Each structure stands twice: as structure tokens, then as C-alpha cells.
Length: 354
Ligand SMILES: Nc1nc2c(ncn2[C@@H]2O[C@H](COP(=O)(O)OP(=O)(O)OP(=O)(O)O)[C@@H](O)[C@H]2O)c(=O)[nH]1
Ligand SMILES: [Mg+2]
Image (cartoon, rainbow, N blue to C red; front, side, top):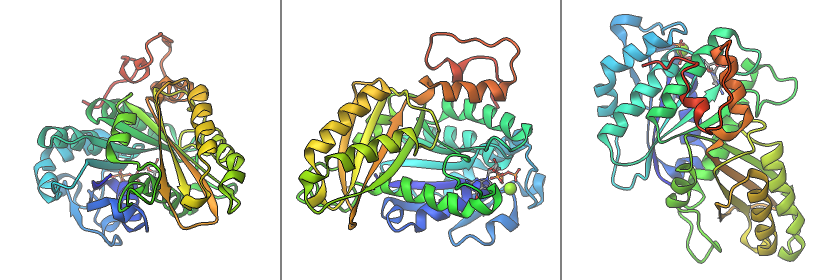
């Protein structure tokens, strides 16, 4: 799936750069831009950048004020859209931001709304949720931003900052490593079907498989795990099923978000090592575990001795994990646990940004 990529804010810019320079990610990224209100955060980036909100932020950022972040983006959004090159080969637009800060948190929903009006292609977001030890302001910002972004984007792929952090790694020292993991996994997903000859893979993951999986809901998550494999495909049934199991149960970008409206299983590895029986078993397990009948699948040829499973889950707002994050963010005294699966992102417990 080819995407035009726009990072908003500091996390957004760093992640856009990581994805656009990732060995696989760069095959899927047709254009990339980093937008911020802070000059110093744009300077180190090796991608095209755009400073916005100079009149209000003076090039110094918005200090975690996401309402100001939204206002600034609203004023300069035409200029941002102008800088993004969306060619005919582009399957979707992808807006990336940390949802807990100011510029990205407030700016991403405004930008997603504008891009949806300008282009007839899906506008997806990659949103980073603050880790549990980040302060209340971050949690609240992220909750309000997420609620608004879920309405304005076609789907929001969520990555919890605690999910792919290594043990003992502080959040700050871990950012580079976390960003690389995110870029590696999202890069694999986006590039899975790019530049793959139909003869090379048993089934190709084209853009429509991703669109259809994400169409199942407003929020999405991705899981990843790999396993050792044998050079004989028929000995790799367990390698594929256990990688899939670990991708969902311990390797997801949104821990414990295991209920979904639709799923996509990408099995990555040497095509000669991929067991069809393993893939069938893994897909069937995935459907049972996530509670959906819609499990799509495909292969991603990768030159490796290992086999990996990448699981994309659409419609994870059905998960308790999302509900509990939004509850924490809204600080609502009177919690509503309604039956409607999308209620967590549409209820009035938490004010949207606009
Ligand atoms: N994964 C990841 N998260 C980051 C990174 N940098 C910041 N964050 C997270 O993103 C949130 C803060 O957003 P930033 O992107 O720093 O803020 P901003 O959009 O630049 O907004 P202002 O600085 O307030 O103008 C926090 O939850 C951080 O933990 C990063 O490089 N990687
Ligand atoms: Mg900043």
C-alpha cells in the first residue's frame, strides 16, 4: 500500500522519518513531510519539513496545549496540504502524531479532516498513546485527541508507548528504539504487497486487504512476533501458529486489545518455508481469538531464516483496553458501559477537541 506520510509534532516527525527511511517502509512511502511549531525539533530531521504557527508559537512549540495546537493547524492547514505531494499511485494518506502533546495532538485531527475533504482516498492516522507513567495532562490530551481523530480519520492505528518498550528502558532513552520497532512493523505491513511479483508470494497483500480490514471500525492495532523455522515448509506449522499467537497475545501495539471487527494476517519469510497448513491453522485461531469471521491473509516474501507473523486488527474499540484508556482519560465519575462497541470513542464523557 503506497502512502503519502505526514508527521505532526515531535513524535510525528521522528516517526515519519523512521518509516520513510526504513528498508521496507520506504518502498511504500511516496512522499513525506514533517510539520511542527518548534524549529529545533524540525532541524535534525532528514526529511522535508514545514514550520507552522510562527505567529502564535514563535517557533518554540505549544507546550502541550493541544487546543492551541488545533488552532495553529487550522490557520495553516492550507499550506500543509499544499506541501504534500499525493500522486495517482498513492493508495492512502497517513498522518502520524504523538497524541499526548500539543502540536501533534491538536494538529493531527484538523489535518485529517482537511485531507479527507481534499482527497478521495482513505486518510489513516498512526497515533501514539502516552505510556502509563506519563502525566495526567498527557493522558487527557491523548483521550481528547483520540476521540476527535477517530471521527476525522478513516481509522486510527494505535501504538501504546509502553507496548514495544524493552524492559529497563526509560521512555526517553527508548524513543529511538521504539520508533525503529514501529517503523519496522508498520513498514512491513505497508510494503508487504509492494514490489512483489504474483509468482513470488502465494497470496499478495494488496492495498484493498488493508482498507477492508481497517474499514471494520474506527481504531486499529498491529501485533508482531517471529519464530525460528526449518528449511522444510511442512515442518513449520508450529512456527507460524506460535508466531501468530505471540503477535496477538504479547506483541501487540495496544496490549490486551484482542477483540476486533476484522483481522489481517501477514506471514513474512522465505516463501519456501511458509507452510500453507500453518497459515490456515493460524488464521482460524486468529478468528476465534479476536471474535471475527473476517480474517484476511497474505504473504510477504522476506529473505530470512525466521518466519514472522504480523497481525492487523481493525475495530479494536471493542476491546476493554480502549475503554479503560478512555475512562482514565476522561476521569468520568459516572461511567457508562453501554453495549455499543463504538461508544467508547463517541460517548460524551470526554470532550472532543472540536
Ligand atoms: N514513540 C514515541 N513517542 C514520543 C516521541 N517523542 C515524544 N513522544 C510521545 O509523544 C507525546 C508528546 O508529544 P510530542 O510529539 O513530543 O509533542 P508535540 O506534538 O511536539 O507538541 P508540543 O511539544 O506540545 O508542541 C508524549 O506522550 C511522548 O511520550 C518519540 O520519538 N517516539
Ligand atoms: Mg514539541
